[in-house]
Amino acid sequence: ELVAAGAVLPMGDILPAEYYDNLPSSLKAVEEALKYDGKYWGIVPLPKGPNVDEHQWTVQAISTTLIPVNAKDPEALAALRAFLWQEDDVLVSDFISTHVKNQESADVLLRANQEWQGQTSRLFENFFEKDDFVKQTFRDIAAGQKGAAAAMAEIKPIIQAKLDDLFNQ
Image 1 (cartoon, rainbow, N blue to C red):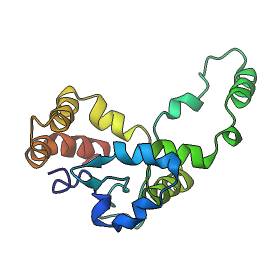
Image 2 (cartoon, rainbow, N blue to C red):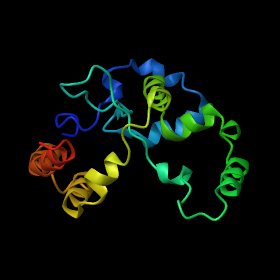
Image 3 (cartoon, one colour):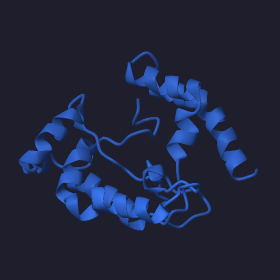
């Protein structure tokens, strides 16, 4: 039902089974965690809207890289952050193996990180996390208490209203 509702994409329907036999061992545990009903699930980009030619990427946890405007010593905070968390310390392979389990999903995730230009932020939090009804709907789908297609139809007006508000329509 999640596939029919457009919420997720079954990777097993796209890639041949032998592809999964060749995954690096570091990805095997993630692979099993993302297997449901004999199919493999992966990351796909958000759909393009009618007025754009390229996918728009969002970022999560952007606040972890911001310095408060009332910081007494912002340069020191920037230096501390740079010292404590250096991007070079995180291997791309470690990042990928933590979040995805196949090459196609890895390509989408890396592309999202490379192409993000800062134009969207907190999309998921604003649309899902701040609305208790929407959040509970996703929990109900995950728990099997609601069908995905019916649940998506149920929250569609809420999401549309948020989009209309966002784009002043």
